[in-house]
Image 1 (cartoon, one colour):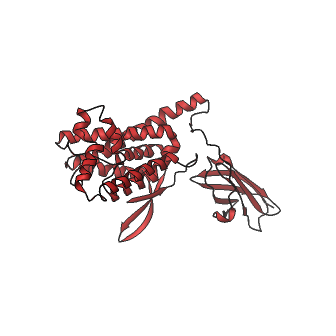
Image 2 (spheres, rainbow, N blue to C red):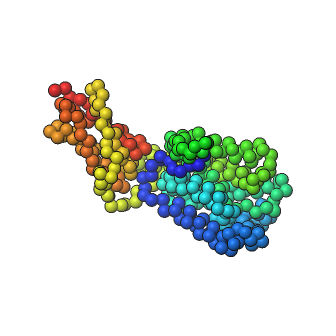
Image 3 (cartoon, rainbow, N blue to C red):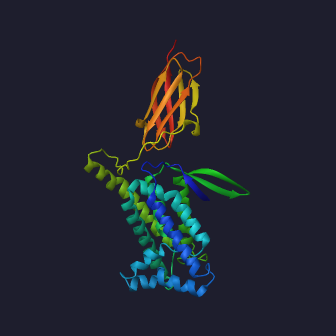
Length: 338
């Protein structure tokens, strides 16, 4: 199962920090490839990992000086498949965590989750006699991103590529996708009794440590930190990071999916794709009897203006309710008998 994107909406602009983290990882990977002749020079590769990777024995014996290598190891990878997999997961899940916590908290949490991953993996490695083997990769910190995402966005769905005879895409609820992924890490890292790496050379217990730290952070943040900040700000119980001021953009209605009109007994329902708004209160709809048009406007980081035409037989209608979820607006109008 390979994730390609999710349906959780961002409301605070582009995730520039997440892009920066990906850029640093890619830049370091290019440097690694150039120094090691694209990972074919075993001696240069070993020296690099011993110098900049997390070596469990040194992590504990040279602490706190060894903390530097925990950070450097988060931006190094062992091959092209390693970095591609990690960057895809960071691309899919990291943007929403940055959107929820803000850039400063996100980078601090990201590094903290990486430390949690390194500590659990190193403790297991030392106990099994593998403490001299260096560990590299962003997957420990990214596992923390997954743990926090599962808690903060429990209703999200993950668009996933499945390969079994044919290649096709399915939407999997996050409360199915991420727990299944975590179960695999436990199976290979603990139940399998293969040591911290197992036969594959993957530090599964680093994933477990990062994920648990991320999930705990998500629970604590959702139930204590964010509501407390909201209370201090006097804005109720739902905390939202400061909204970046951007110039509204009028969307070209031709380029958007046209609104769909559904007629039922006593009502009309309009389904419209509207992205970039916070909630239903930002969407307004009015009905024009003469033209049979329902004018729809929405204000957020982008501004929409569109119209949906009711059937020519429509005698009259009044807007009854507006609902909004995952970029889709549902506008219900009650029919007025002629």
